[in-house]
Length: 290
Ligand SMILES: [Zn+2]
Image 1 (cartoon, protein in one colour):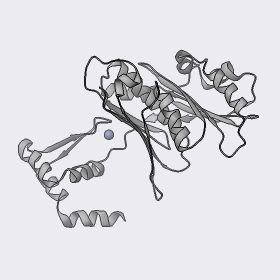
Image 2 (tube, rainbow, N blue to C red):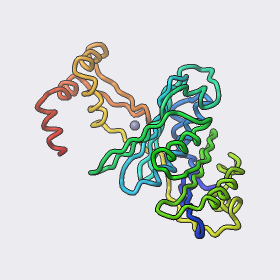
Image 3 (cartoon, helix red, strand yellow):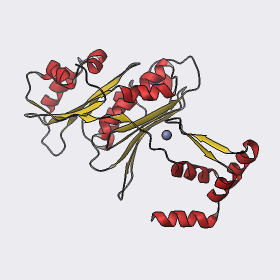
Image 4 (cartoon, rainbow, N blue to C red):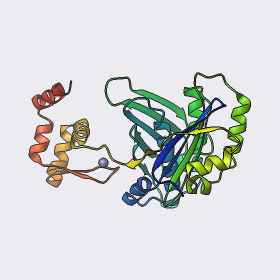
């Protein structure tokens, strides 16, 4: 039985290696329902969604992890986000209808930015690496190598109905065992995309590691949920500046903003716009938050 919209963590009892497996189903289709992505963009976005869910499992506190790819290719922007409660969202921009395949051809030269924002107090972390490697998985492996010096491998797949991923990582703060690492990653290299999305975590781990002693933890549900709000849209409008926003208001009678992640619409009439840019209201607003 395949598993739907869940993430599971596991460890090798006798080897210093840990792993995670994610299956995205309805959470992935919710992204596809909102935008008709060309096939190569869809594949890349689905893989990125699976990847960010796998990465979010490393968060040790309430927060959001964002994976952003910016390049000069036909896909200039891809953003995926996952909270520590496994609420996911994602989007991609593309320029042409006929797109090449392959990571380099789609993204061109660019960079991969990983941002971790704690929900409450705490420091925002940002790691940036150049886009290198033939696949998104290789790109992310490069990121882990540079930023955390923690050997990490990912296997990702995405189709029209589901996206899935497997992550293996050397256990931090344990003595390294290169031979064991080679052994478990060589076995994982034999996994096919169909197996990754079609088999349950238990079946997949049995197929790969039936000779190893494994501990599989409970499944955590993963879902699509957007974190947009009127307050956040207001902050964006303030960022645009009074001149720009009142210009739109004059031209269109109101300011309408659609959230690009979930499609939810936000309207601002003349009074709303005025309130946005009243200095007193702004300072009272920010004062209330601190
Ligand atoms: Zn939204």
